[in-house]
Amino acid sequence: MESIYNEQGILNNKEILRFKFSLITSKIGENKNKLLHKLGLKSYFGTDFENISIPDSKIVRLAIEEANDLYNFSLLKHCYRTYFFSAGIALSQNLKIDKEFLCTTSILHDIGLTDKHNHVCDKQCFAVHSGSFTKELALNNGVGKIRANNMKTSIDMHLNPYVNRKKFGNEAYVLSKGAAMDVIGAHSFQLSPGFIHDVHKKYPRVNFKENILKTMTLLNHKEKTRADTLFKMGFQKLASNNDLDII
Image (cartoon, rainbow, N blue to C red; front, top):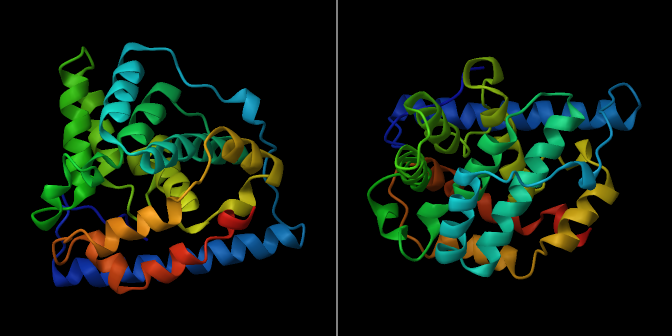
């Protein structure tokens, strides 16, 4: 199964079919892993919230400054939870990650949904805009071109139900899974209830469901973007029935 990737974030008809197929097959794979885990036939490594920290680096500090300026409370906490869930998933699968890279991309992955930037939604995929914003911030603050490009790609792809880990890296792979976990509850069985509780205690889900639904229903997402396709495939129902909202 290939990762869906288009630099503009606007899919042609063939890519939309591939995206839909990826959504279905990814969900089947997730349900299979969940069942195997429940039956004790598939295990994951334990995770501890205290073992995951926010890196103290220039680019992370700058990302957090931008996030504090641009996000509302709900989206800001979502981005922090995305980082901790993504890092937790990496630990659960024993994957090595670059925490600075993952934290920066997690914190900035939804910039395109903020009041200052969401005017782009009717022109291009908001994730692509978020990726471009992050790349520019990184390049302007001493991050190398290859690393900045990879940050952009990771954010560009976070809406994809499947990201090829070998092709795009562990960070892009877990960012997609961590963001999906926070929004619709996907992959939550990989993390312990205690870990999830600790994340929620530090970064509460107050009004998140209502706010994330508004970003899909009130913003005019351009037709044939992944956001538009997800909405048409039942995003509202998935987000409304997120099990994390009752943990």
